Image 1: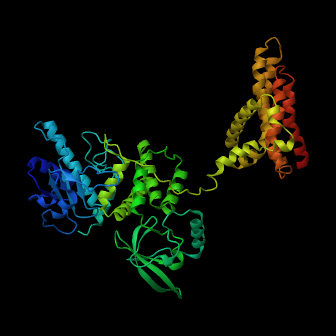
Image 2 (image 1 turned 90 degrees about the vertical axis):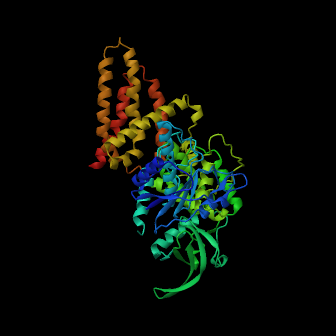
Image 3 (image 1 turned 180 degrees about the horizontal axis):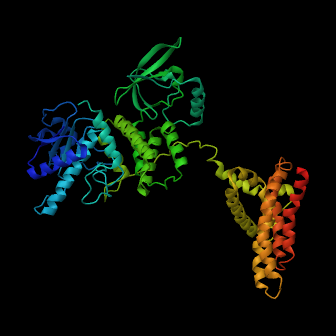
Length: 181
Length: 384
């Protein structure tokens, strides 16, 4: 089961679209677990939130073994700086773990038109699939049409696909089949 | 689950040991089991990061063997490596932060054209994963990544790409002390930086030179061999021959034609023909082709058209008929290897006069047919 937890107010239509998409992508039940408060402890002096700390401090949710929990937020996240700089943070997940975090901060504004809302929802679905994919031990994919392609990649179109490619889908299905529950 | 690693049957052992001798070693390779102590973190090539848990003794097939016990950090799988095998399986220390920085500079650097020959690529990749250290793993990831930009990877290579990426992510995350997902972000940040970002790159470290297989090292040797056709032995100076370059070019064309012919005739015949054809085919095939244009250009000569048409069409069948006889006749002179080398030279020597004599068109034709027939006769005689 995939459990969605919102750390900011989200439109119900967006959450419904996300639930349906996640169900279609991974073949496992998805439900909205409700809203939770954003842990302020993870806030950095520059106003951004440390992604690792935010996920650590995120309010726990009642879940069974092998359940995956996705936290949705709209704050700007920060990754630890690497040898070549700080990669932009669209979210964070524990590889092979149970909890993931997705931020909508870098999304295009949701807007009010049907088209812009559609693009926003598709992007939300894509990023959620991406970070849940990490929970299923998936790595980044070189194919720009796959949801596991890095979110900041220059080869990613403005409105990217929100599905896994054949290799990543097979791998995630194998992992899901091996799950205890 | 306990897996006994690196324990092989005697037959296989020799092969693996030989392989290990061939491959060069990256920095940090553990040379003997005495370098290991409990708590050490080591990288088992193509497996991942392990933590040494200690020594263990086991009775196997009546022998008391001592093993190093290691546990994979990723999933807790245990591996027992015989003490004597530690030096040969390519165990190495986890890369230092400096090494890892070098890896990122390597990943961020521009990349040469990826290897397009899948056999060479596969062999190189496997060697790099075993013996190239962390930079070797990065090489595999970068190589396959840049190849994927040209075309989608085949299934096997896609798996190799995924597993080598997994190894690299693991080692980087252990070396830098960051979670796997962040380590992977660093890798992809270097591989495909966001638009408008310029990475502060330094000169990347040089990867470990892999000793290529012999067939791979043939290329430079082949260039030398070209010069050494055994012409010196025969006292032939190519430079002194007029239009030597042209002759060579024509010969290569002939060679191609022969190759095609050989492939058409069959695989088992091909081997024999590869050795025999140069002396046989060059006089039979080359002259009719060359003789044709002048014959056309000389319409006043009456018999020219029939002569042109007949020998060309007949010459081919005669040589083909003669070929099996010549093949059977060939084995006796073949044992002397210089004969093979002398063949192209003889062909070269014979070709220019034939071409120069071509304009008359009548005379060379029978001359060319003759050498093809001549070997046939003694062959028959020998047969009888």
